[in-house]
Length: 503
Image (cartoon, rainbow, N blue to C red; front, side, top):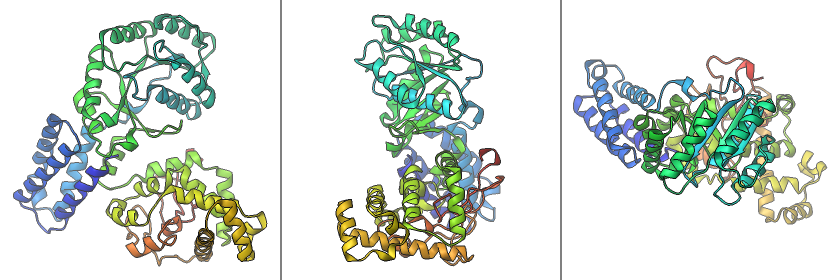
C-alpha cells in the first residue's frame, strides 16, 4: 500500500535534502509536486488542498528556511501533517468491547470482504484479548452467506449462532443477543447483509438491527481498491448509521492509498483496521504514525517485531539462539528460517518494513524476491533424509539427483540451496565468534548504518533469494526490554527487542 506515493515523495524529498539551503521558491515547487503526487494517489481534492495549506503555513517561515537542515525540517512537517490527516489519536483504534456481551456490528456493500473481516476481528479478539466470541450472520439474502460464516467460525475456533431458516434479520439479532447473554460470551459480532449498491431497504434494515442490538461499535467495511467510491460509501453510510470506525480491506493490493488518506478527513471517522489477504491473521491495527512512516520511507520495524512475537514460537526461538551462539546451522535450521520468512509476510513484506529499503526498490526487484523460490527451496530440503540435512557434506551427485527428483526441480536448484546454506552456515560461524559478516554494515538498525550495496543485495542467495543474514545488526528498539534472539531462526536479524510483557 502507498508504494507509488512513497516512491514519488521519496524523489521529491531527495531533491530537498540534497540542498544546503532552501528558498521559499524551493519549498513552493516541492509543495506543487507533493500536491500532484497526492492527486495521482487518488486522494480527494479538498483533502489535498487542506493538507498543502497546512504544510505551506508551517514550512514557509524563517525557522525552516534558515535552519541547518531545512530539507529534513520540511520532511518532519509533512510527516506531522500526514499523521494529522490519518488520525493521530491511538485510542480511537481500540474496539470498545469491555462490557460483556459487547456488540460489534459489521456493515458494508456486498463484495467488500465483510464476512472475511468479521472472522479476522473475531480471531484477533479471541487470540489476543482472550475474549469468548459469538458470531451471527444476519445476511438472509446472499446464497450460503450464513453457511460461510459457520464454516469460518469453525476454522478459527469461535462459536457461531445456529441457523434458523426463514428468520428475518431483526429476529436473528434478538436471538443472538439472548444467546450471547446465556452463553457467557464477551463479544457478539453481527455480520449484516450487504448490497451491490446503497438502497433504502438496506439502510432501514441496518438501522433496525442497530436499534435492537445497541452496538458499541458499528464498523463499515470498505474495499480500498475502489478509491474515492469507498470514501463516498463511508460518507453515505455514516449519514444513516452512527458508524464508529472503518476497516479497509485489500490494503495489500492498493498501490495508491487514496481511500486511506481521504477517509478520516472526509468522514471524521477513524480507520480501525487494514485487511490484507484472505487468511484469518491478515488484519493490521491502523496506526497513523506507522502508516505515515511507511509513506515517507521510514519503514515499520515495530510492526515487524510484533509479527515476530505473534508468529514465532518462543521455545523454538531459544533453542535456535543457543545453536547460533555455538556457530551451528544445519539445513533443518535453514528450512525453519525460510518458513518463518513466509510467516512474517514473505521477503517483500519484511523488506518493506525496514527503513530506507524503498530507495533500493530497483535492486530488490532485480534480486527476484519471489516467495515461490522460498517454497521451492523448502521443498528441496524436505526431500532430504534427516542425516543429509544435518550433514550436507554427504550429498554426492547421485543423492542430489534423487533429491531433485523428489522436489520436482533440476539438480541445479539443489546445488543453489546447498551453496546458499554454506554461505549462511559460514556467516553463523562468524557471528558465533563475534565477527560481523559484512564488516559492520547496518549497525543498530534502526538508527543509522548503511544499506547493502546493490552488489551485496544481488549476491545474497546468488541473485535469487537475499537471505536474511544479509541484514545483520537490526539493533534494539527504543524503550524495549528483553530480546527476541536472532528473530529466532532468522540469524540476519539478531537482537531485535520486544517489550517485556510480550515474552
